Figure (cartoon, rainbow, N blue to C red):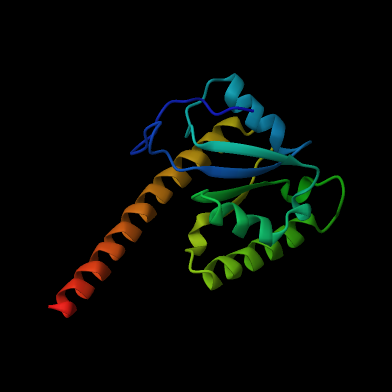
Length: 160
């Protein structure tokens, strides 16, 4: 699966947020493939890792992805359609809660993680999620840069 390299909103190919997508083989992968096949426009910074089941994601993987330079992680969940576990959606919600707590504990904004159920024919929905998430990450990037500038200015002003 490869993202179509067309910028959306404020992103360009060079400043598009890097988004890691955890997808499921049987449920969300076909929808993501369909988005590519239909040449739907979404961030060129999207990278997809396929897994058998959403509940197999470890919260530490999400933190690791952010620490390694991904600006966001998106879980394309199977929702209630999981073929492996009847409580997969509940487990996935717990994984997201744990990962968000880990992100906050390590100084990252918990909004760097999103999850939505993506079905096998949800190409437009996937592209829409990627575009809104990209825009949110670009806004978060600007907010964090402004906060760093303000902190640097106050440190410089205090030193005078």
